[in-house]
Length: 290
Image (cartoon, rainbow, N blue to C red):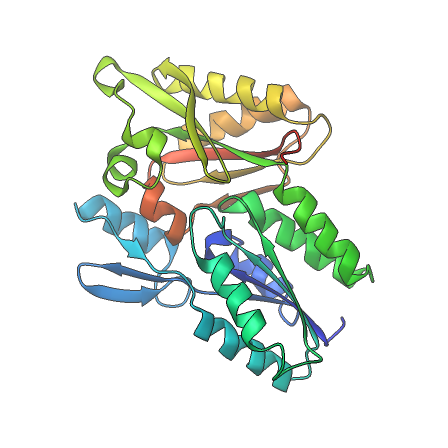
């Protein structure tokens, strides 16, 4: 493995601890800080997914997560430079929903003269969770295979301008309270037993389907995702605390598409802050944007 290259992402990526360990030495995941009931903890370091799901169920307060700051990025860049790293690829959570992308760019500019031989590439993941977490793992594979930094960055940027998330909200309480997923906040069909299917990418958050009951909305999500994805491309699924519905969702996707998800992981702390503990989502490669 090339010890002069690192890929940095943030903990909104929902890459598993096992995958993080597998790519140790190439991949670094910087944690977001999450605050609830006046207490701040570092994601993946001081709190894990299952703990956080329980906190969400037991508390009415909506947790808040902060961006990773320019200072934190600068410190990380200097640390890696001191360890002999000369190329850093940074892939961040959706720049339309977080300032983390812009903070990484500010840090890059601030260190341009101080670390003049450090090549920093910053890529906006343009989505959430495995929407960019999947591409980060693929980038690790490509680097380990000897692909050039330019080709890996091109892959990451290409993935980001195609990826779309289709989110099924089984319980909208946290989505509505957080207000960060505006489509859920304005959804009014719950009293009639309707469940929304929400598409997310860039600054877009829209209800694209609504169906009565969990089985119906799962079917709608499968049909919609399959109709929107480019055939024979990889897709990923993120789960929470609805194992029966999640299993049905994955089985129906696999049957309709003809092959299983490339990754299935649990939704992490950062995304759960806004989506809550009762949802499931699929991430696909759709048509190119801009």
